[in-house]
Length: 152
Image (cartoon, rainbow, N blue to C red):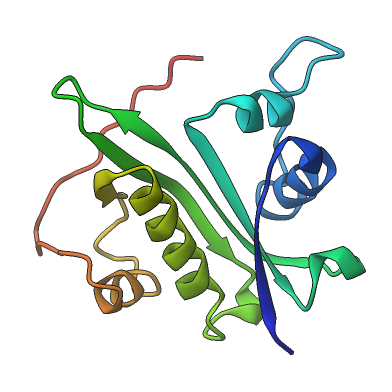
């Protein structure tokens, strides 16, 4: 079966919620009742999301992967693209979905004239690190540590 990658837009609220249910099952809409976090995300011109589907999404296929992130303008005027999450169902891994999703993100970054695409993962992420390197990413062993602040 072939894989289809679809960039999601404002008309795809149901598909976005399906991806959230599949890959972030504990998600909740953080906006006020009647509002939609999915629509707010898609309406933001700097945000992007891709879904990976076995076969055609228009035929009602189940999602097998997703990727989302944002384009950010730097103070010097250049654009950087950040990939926040890439996930593929465990039973669909090693079939090309992650590569296709990353290629779409790279294409989206190029279309925005971004000078860099970046993401953060752990050194111990044995599934993803070889993928990123195979797609031409630079990797520094012993490189940066991720720090986060929970502001909620």
